View (cartoon, rainbow, N blue to C red):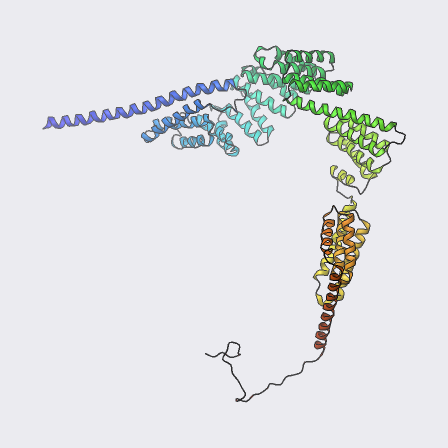
Length: 639
């Protein structure tokens, strides 16, 4: 009996060990496959990031996403089958969170990272989770929460993600429109001697970009040329070289900038951008006043890279030179045509086509202007209209601001027509303000417009542009104010009680007088035309003045047909034209009879009010005479 019981216990122990071994095998199988798939997806991710120019905007391929999905699936099974095993579930949650992050599903990754901190705060991967959660919050556009989540990372210099945290802090400051704080955070990375050279290279690259945006070319170039930049990948080194050269060009050191682009051109790592570099070398050389050398470079581009965007840009530069430097518009048109033919879908081809058309239009207008000058009796209206068109072409189509100003100055000095002088004077001041950025000259010219042409729309706008209090009032403004006063009188008259008819008539007559004065003073303004319409309404209110109302409506219809008041008057007159003279006469008689009857009733009413009311004696009836009605109309109520 004892032996049988002992063997039963032994079998139970063996079975328990067997089942425990199976669960361990299941866990190891799931986690082994999850880790293997995660490593394979990581290799694909590394290859993808190395091959694309913009790693931030790169998205996983479908195969890479499938592997991360499998990792999430395997990790979820571990959580489902071993919920009480802290070690196993911690590894599974961490892999799931990382997989969501690599897939770009930031919100899901944040949930898993929060879950990890809640249950496994003492795990070795917790420090990684702290940074990656802050990064995912940043990518999910939750900047304030990201900054809060980043605090434990940047508070400890021994944190393994301390320098990455400072870099992320600079990104958060940049998003919050505080570039100076972003610069301060990155400067802290460079000041710390514990930072790795690679991280310092990253910091130099970001700092250079921030200084470039602030147009601090010296500091930007200093960071782009830092020795740690050489540790970055090819794409970032290439960008640093280009931007460092652009800093020199922005400092107007054009030939030095061209020399740095030549170094980039000779670098075999940047083979794909050689055509673009060659064009930029030509542009910098041209800006450095080395015209023959620039022409040789542009011709090299056109020969070696025909039918390309680089050739289109090269021809555009040649056309721009002929247009602005030599003023040979015919040759410029030829170059602009070549730019379009080289690569018709490029941006440079589009600009070249616009400039070519503008130059052709300019040459035609110049010919017309010269012909008009030769006429014995020139048409000055047409001549100055042509001059304005030429100025607009120079400004908006050909980007020749000085030529546009010269044309406008010629108009101002050549005519006595105040309207044309006003238009040209304001346009010249506006060009100095908006296109040349010469605020002092613009202010002087704006004040000249205000002084010489007060109470005009241009003078009023000049005050607005100068930030002054608007004191100028145009005829439209004065007419509008006068109309508001007349309208208020009309409203008062309409709200007066009818038992004060004398005062009502006086109020309407006063409003009518103001509407009439307004139209005579400002007949061409919108308020003046509306005042004329109100005169017609006033006449229409008096039956004996219907003919006057019709006459006013005809003036509105004939002289102001394009306004809504003229159109309304035409509608009223069209309705009246349907009535014959006999109908109109019958209507007038009917109105007269109605007025006569109303006046008669009114007199009777007022006479009755004047008389004293007589006291009525109560009439007593006998019971025999009293008749009671059992109806609801009776003054009694019977059941």
